[in-house]
Figure (spheres, one colour):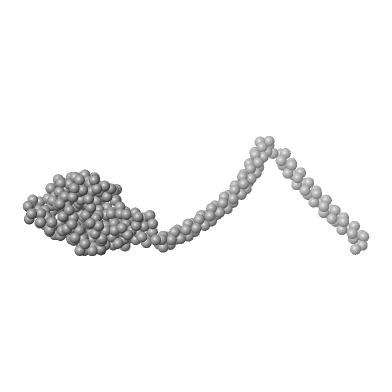
Length: 325
């Protein structure tokens, strides 16, 4: 390119730049002229509006930033909640599986529990009729006083009060078959004092008082069998009745006969309240050891047969007493 052409291009560019400067200067001069022509109050309002707009713009930006942070935190909390729920479901499933396989769960399954519930519908205590034999049946313990218990891995699976009531109901029905009037000290799960039980029998003018219980031994499950406890004075009527009942229970089988005993397990010089305060032939029958699987099985299988055998013995004994008078 010749030097003349270069100078021509330079001049053109210079003219363009100068024209641009004059245009910008003209615009600024126009703006300033118009600004100066505005009234003072108008300028003040415009300035306040501009400042307010800038403040609002900044506030909107800050709010948008904070809202974004809160949204992120909410998403994080939701994720954490989902993870916790999944972990809780996993732990719950593991616990349910463990309980299903636990020996404690097996022990408390309802396969053996129904045997502890009365199988005969309870009836109100009867008022003795004239010219009838009267037998008072006492189901030991009751309500909060459960008596001896059978536990498996620390869980109660069998309670004496339930076995006592079940057998009392069975014995009542068996005695009624001989047209014997039966008075119950309790026919539901209630608590009675020891003296109160004997007083019920005395007030009814009962000929016999039989208190049903279960034994227990913490040492070994091998200790088992039926015991008959009477007054330590060894009254002939109570002893002969205990012997007759024992003979019938032996016929049924299933439990070892531990024989007739006198006084209390703690001392032969003392007596249980049932025998101490009763005005008639009385005894406590310990129908096997609740701590013995063999005795529990026998009671479950032969409970009704034991009741029928005891009722037969009581009736025959009462008949003998009349004949000897």
